[in-house]
Image (cartoon, rainbow, N blue to C red; front, side):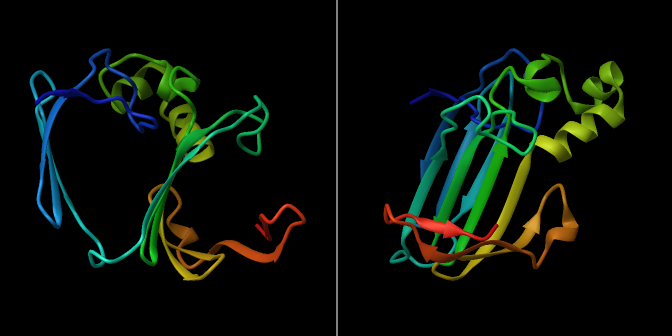
Amino acid sequence: RVHVAHRLVDFQPPTGVLPRITSSSSSDTLEVLALPPCRSKEVWQRLGGEGDSIVALELESASPSGGSADGRRRTGLWLFCGRHFVRVLGPPGGDGLVSGTCCGSLEHLAALHGEEEVEKELRGRFEAVHGEVESPGMLRVKADALRPNRVGELLYAATATAADGGLVLDK
């Protein structure tokens, strides 16, 4: 069975082609094969055991100013599997240089708009973080694709419960 892949966040500019994919899975791997013209293969390995809790959360920014520190919207996902988490954030499709310019690659985008501008947007508006849940409400960065100096940083620390039952975050 063939599916069309829609990317919520992509660190590459759109090429104008929606990839068609097929997938197969076993108890501990997922294989994704992109069909021509894209031609790629991804193999995803399960982390942790089959009994680990898995949670996926999609970021929804209700207001135009509810996204990032600069007031721009961001979209993305949190994935939790046992004690591991990943967080991927970026501007919605069509917003900004990377998501809003249709071209062949980041190299082509840098040639069009300048490497400094592309790098500034990637570091300012995108995030790809892997980390560990040290305890409920305590999330520590183990790797950051765009900011390697964040390794070991405390990403979130929940210190109290709000009146509505939600967590109050220090960061």
